[in-house]
Image (cartoon, rainbow, N blue to C red):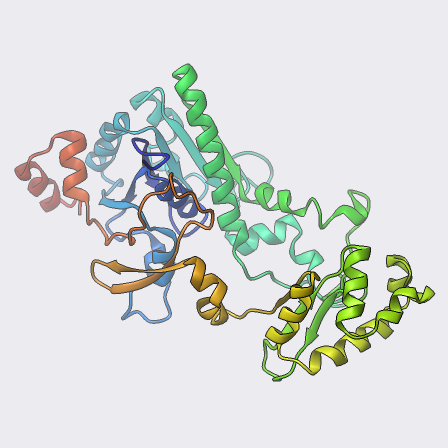
Length: 394
């Protein structure tokens, strides 16, 4: 049985920071009902080809049902509040002040369901000097310091492309919701949960900021991590024909020397310690660079990693879909979508064979409006037709 079977979630999220949270809950079996406006989650429109369904939306909304309510109308808000007693969790990540204007803030939802767990995901939280600032993933990363430590020494800050501010915040919020749910089972009491994207990303800076912990700005160090660790170009000359090598221990250093055919370096005083290797790093970088240029990135990876030296080819976004390891582990699934046909999506990256639900494609807009309102509120077909004709539901 899925771990969260029986838990019901009202999902009023959009884009990624909130949707990634509720998707995690859906992957583990929660009944996630995504409440959308008549125009839908704006994430549905994130696509380079308007003639095709948004892969972005598909990536963050699997294992959900979709209900369309126009919350700008009193009748739509009333329907949502009437639905609330049937749910354990409510999640939203609207911009500052939106849920208050719609009349669906924590106080309103708690009045409808005193034991509800209400999770709000905001760029900077709901208080403090930045509380009214809008945020997206890159804004959160900029405000948490990640750009400041990324780039070459002496160069400008560099944007970090993976959206871990959005999804990282979502995952942390999902964890908090589950802890709060356990508490609710013990006490019968709900809770207001607040996640700040800035704070969630700052959490990931605990290791990167160690060198100058709270005392000075961390300097950018580029692609090198203490000789011979770093990124090296490999045979082929393509934009991603590179490999990353990392020697963290003396044993890995010794093994590295053997792999590149230079075992005598282990006894060379210039390289006896990590500090000595850093001081004489250019020699090691040049030597390692020559070794890598004679091999493809995969050949370099297999020689190094196979011997015990932490190493990986620099995978590009096509490699991820073709990599034999990921293919064998079935990280990427092809599933059937109602209108788009076969689509490729990620499964839960954490395997829980006894606890996860079967993977289902993201819903079409309003696909489940009638079935949810009928089961939650007992509305008959005539009631639904009337609400739809008046633009309250879709």
